[in-house]
Length: 231
Length: 91
Image 1 (tube, each protein chain N blue to C red):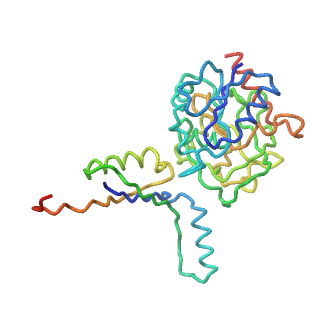
Image 2: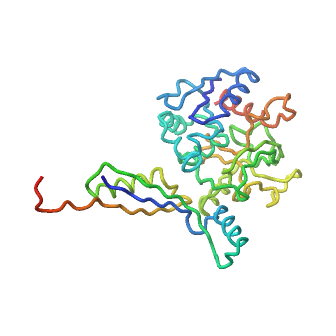
Image 3: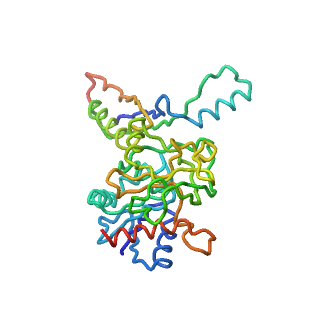
């Protein structure tokens, strides 16, 4: 399977993603610069975390206008697998490839910590190697992860099982206390209606090898590999 | 040249944690009459454009595509028009 990992000015998790994919999972990885015009022949693309364009104006506001994003839109509309992590999620929202918007964290702090999230939907190309309701531990590192959508959009997300990850307690209960940033409905990650675009605030690439003592992010990448192989 | 003053603010009803923190801080300093604070952005944009109608159309397009996120924000702007040339004066 061939992956594309994008790099915008200010991305800083691109190499982590490429490392996990190529060094840990034996995948073929193309590093793709934001001003490149095409994605090439890839099976999946990752918009990594970081601070594209310095988070100026709004986190992820300017990256949608990078030349490569025209190709990403076409790839997404053709059904290609698109994964946005943290700033990549913010970019997908600003680009309109996922619904909703991010606000500043409710406590205003930049949060760098492990959180528990519950896998709400395993019938996706990104989560088939998790179990429904499984509680996993993933790291977050963001200042603007406070997800917002208008009431109609939110109910559509709920009705279509587009909410894929929700912040929860260790026992799996979704509570306000377990919500680190004020996200609506404890949303940590959503997919698009077609199901091929996923955005999440936690960083699965930072917990995808045993040396870090937490492999909970690994099944996400295994799921995508399996999905690409069987599609 | 036309100069534009663009104000981008969070929509009513969208929680503004910064505004809330500033209100608390003002309260702590004794400004107890502050009901609410909302934080926004102010942008000053200079346009190579003489025609106010064109400038207005461009500003609106800029706000709609990049400067504001319509899901959570609203905007307004004022155009600072160049001084009218004094008629009847030769060059």
